[in-house]
Image (cartoon, one colour):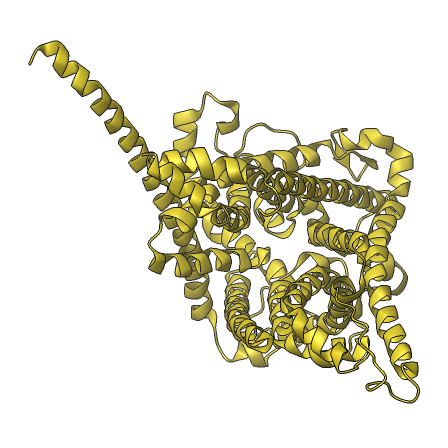
Amino acid sequence: MTSLDVSTDATRRPFPGRRARLGDLLLQGAAGIAAFGALVLVGLIIWKVVQGSRLAISTFGLSFVWDVGWDPVHNTFGAGSLLFGTVITSIGALLLATPIALGIALFLSELAPPWIRGPVTALVETLAAIPSVVIGLWGLLVLAPLLRDHVNPVLHSGLGFIPLFGAPGTYSSNVFAAIIVLTIMILPIIASISRELFLAVPSELKEGALGLGTTRWEMIRGVVFPYSRGGVVAAIILGFGRAIGEAIAVALVIGAVIGVHWNLFSPGYTLASILANTYQGASSGLELSALIYCALILLVFSIVVNLLAQVIVRRSVRRLGGQAL
Amino acid sequence: MSAADLTMLQRPNDRLRRRRFVNRGMQLLCWLAAALAVFLLGVVLLSVARRGAAALNLDLFTKSYVGPFVSAGVKQGLADAFVGTLIVVGLATLMALPFGVLIAIYVNEYAPRAIRNVVNLTLDVLAGVPAIVIGIFVFGLLVVAHGQSAYAGGFALAVLMLPFVARATIEVLALVPDSLREAALGVGAPRWRAILGVVLPQTIGGVLTGATLAVARVAGETAPLLLTNSLAQSGMHTDPSQPLRTIPVAIFGLSEQADEASHALAWAAAFVLIVFILFASLGARWLATRSRRKIAQAGR
């Protein structure tokens, strides 16, 4: 910040700075309190979620995280199958979204003719702006029946030897539909961050490589990817964080059935979507506490993911001598 | 020329051909990826627009929601949900905007470097907390003791908006040239007047952009409202101490109903929501380019 002490006798008023000091005190105080309030807010979120899940933590302990079986009738709860659903949908979505998103980012930063870049960039950002409930509505009523009738049988007959592509059931709501919906949702996130990273690669390096006679793809592999690697990894991690936390769209298409099934065409459940589906009330205090325990797992996941992404970005920025993002 | 010479000549050509082939293939894949994204967006938007426009009528905006499986003669809409969304999002903006701007002023104008990093990291973490967890947090903080209300829902949305507003304001404050601050301090203005009277007015466009984008984002948020503001009474209500019907929650509920009329209503609401969000985003983009130009001029 600039703090210039330029008061001279000529500019000084009779009682310099009494009101000024009060005003400065007020503004700095209010702004400081607000900034401190953000810290308090994050602390409050952690505290409230831990407090709400205390009953479930003391009843089930840490093994809640991997215990399978969610049975409100017998009041036994374990988040294992939910965690399984969260991990399999998120990783599936990442595997599908990452190559496509990198392709989009390369297209927008390196390949596309200038007149196409602006409009397509805007369209990709528009895809990110569609609310999850609308994607979920579309996924439930349009996409899932389409997948059931035309895509799932084809995948099963072609790749049925892999347990993931087991017998397609009659349900249109299943894990595979959730993976596709999540893919659509994280695609624009990874694409737009990667695009910015690719654009930040110095053009001297790119031109140098092309000048040595590399093809465009060799230049991308040899210059653009290594230069932006850290940031791209961070972008993928942020996409992962978004995927594990998505509740609404997944709740609408995944079918809401507890259980660990490798078959992607069977219905499933995730940590976030069970929270969305039981909003109208838990049957017991213990169930409510178990639900909040699920939220705690998500919260820990999201904080770890974000800090990890930050660390990676900072490290790669330092490696590149100061300016990547 | 002997046959051996010919193969000598051919070998590099083969390699070059392969390199060109890989190059072409990879470029083609990138084109296809971009085409796929545009195609996906088109498919989603078109199916919402087609079904939504078909179900769109005046009743949507003038009649309140009645329920699923209503008899054919009963006319219903989502007027109460539109009003509810307006109130909840308005409350959220009132809470998040001043708070976010103050945070940004602190970070950009007052904070020492170390504290600035801490606050920035906090905002990043806050932005990364899943919306449904924010819902659980507000449920524990307010709903357990006081029950659901539009205030609780507005607060939940405000928590989501806060990092957006704060980051957008930090970014635009950083764009204001130091020469302006120095000029204000140089004529004897105290720091607070330099900030509030000279620096902040330059950023109004940018702040509004950030606020508009944040509104566009949270207007469609469902997860934080499910646990804080979802069990609405039927009929038109405007009292924020009661839970109010909102568009996203209504779409969520309607899409899980089994009857066609509910689905039609959900499509119509989704269509209106998307049109609103697209216009808000476009408006924000326009505001952003305008305010950036203005700030650049002010520095000269």
